[in-house]
Image 1: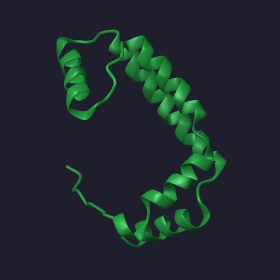
Image 2 (image 1 turned 60 degrees about the horizontal axis):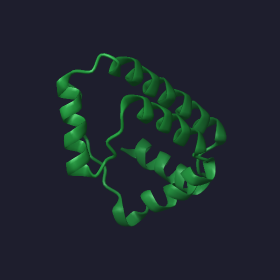
Image 3 (image 1 turned 90 degrees about the vertical axis):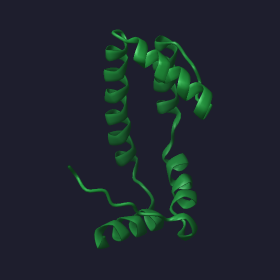
Length: 104
């Protein structure tokens, strides 16, 4: 718990470094590419899940190729300034909730 609070304080005070963004961006891009390759073998369940998300969460309903292209495009537009401004809003004292969940 103490290490979590320490990291939150560090990020709030100093923000993230560009190198951290690049590492995260690379990890997310690998995930997007993995999902894209897997989506070429989509099942009816996957299509139903996307439709449900569209209607219940207002998420866009895009075809596989458009989703892949848009995700990559938007990922590269995120700047370190965007991240650090979001930190100020997300990690305020007013809305901080830490949830612990056992690893099974």
